[in-house]
Image (cartoon, rainbow, N blue to C red; front, side, top):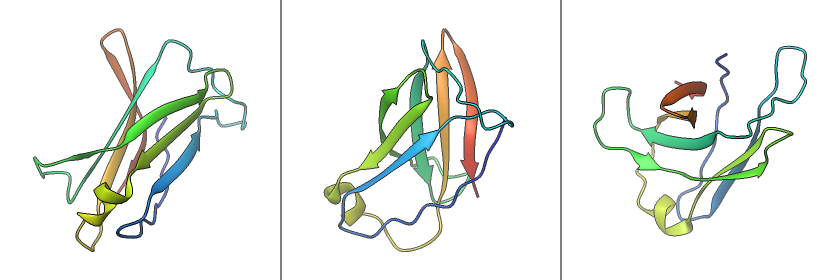
Length: 100
């Protein structure tokens, strides 16, 4: 299941966004046992990535927070980026959100 969401980050400020994992019927997805990972790049082909801090706020309701500190956003250049948020469980990655 892939979903798309645009994020707006202001340079030099702390950024955080809550991601709620839901099925097509808008029911929460239990993410117990999964570890989130999120990265942002200038393009899909860029080898340099910025890693978001990821925190599970609630396994049962599928609530994950992604964040960057004000120091991390201060170093970003203006422009469009792409990012992926993945859930990892025992060697299996499931891409849940991708923005282009």
